[in-house]
Length: 400
Ligand SMILES: Cc1cc2nc3c(=O)[nH]c(=O)nc-3n(C[C@H](O)[C@H](O)[C@H](O)COP(=O)(O)O)c2cc1C
Image 1: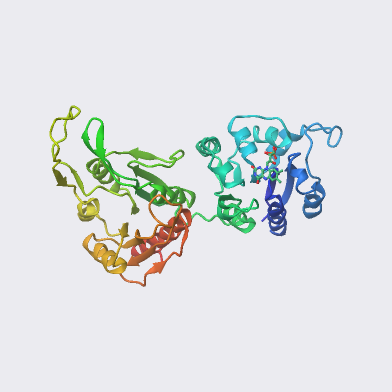
Image 2 (image 1 turned 180 degrees about the horizontal axis):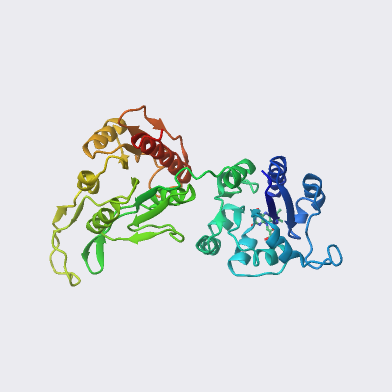
């Protein structure tokens, strides 16, 4: 490996991890140049990075005379094959999102022409702050490559999401990022369908769409061409190819339209079993009656409906939210819906599943042992499911 890497280091506690990341890259044969913000220099010294990289460390935009023939930030931006910012503070994320260039690092970001790998690192409340989330969405929509932070214990002695990904994870993400799903089309459904009663009311369910959206994002980062059919979701969809739907019938139509060209289908949406029998075009008025009856009719089961359209080489993966008899119920659905695999989660547990960031899934197959993902972030669970689906696809298509 002989890549020219620009490593931006900003002022967060995780600077010490960045030293290790830098070492991993140097050991792998990369030529690493480090740009540190003034705040980063309060956490670790430039000398540390200089000793590891064997290169001068860049800290000052206005330092005269070091390499007088070139303008540093423009030169560095053109020099690098890859640009990683780790740790990325809330501050640098905000600055990049808004085109601010007030130090050497941010001035180098603007002329850099490729996506930048950004590893956010901050306290859980800073990370969850809607402004930070908006800025991250903006960066994702601009095509930058966000390396999701981990959930866990923080330096500020709280626990939550915001810990920078481990150096090995960042290294693997950047350098070993095989694209195992390259060339495959993945169709994902996510979120809750909502079934209108009248123009202002509807029935729906508590699905946040996090699991399905995580699957769509992960499939994309693993190289697949992804279409996401999304009902109501509480997470950001920037950067994804999305078909928005409201009702189960609309979701069915969208899936039918896409299924022909799909290699792997991941049905993670929480589709309403019933819809309103008589939709009212006008808002239903309150009357003097003490009771009101709304008649429901059954919605089609999307997986059952599309089962006859399934081609030999396609892989259909479903989800089952179960509160009891997890294995028996999941296997029943696997067979009834002609699925290749089904990921079942235990919704009686409050620490995983609906609305949470973590999940523990047991994946059942037709002809192999079930696989348990352990309790992991939904992104990780999504990765496990996708890689298993890829294996099944390979088997079906004779490439394994
Ligand atoms: C002890 C300490 C730890 C900090 N850790 C973080 C952090 O992990 N993430 C973050 O976004 N900001 C953190 N900050 C705040 C940043 O250092 C501050 O916002 C600074 O302006 C960032 O500048 P920079 O983005 O130019 O490096 C920390 C500050 C202190 C004093």
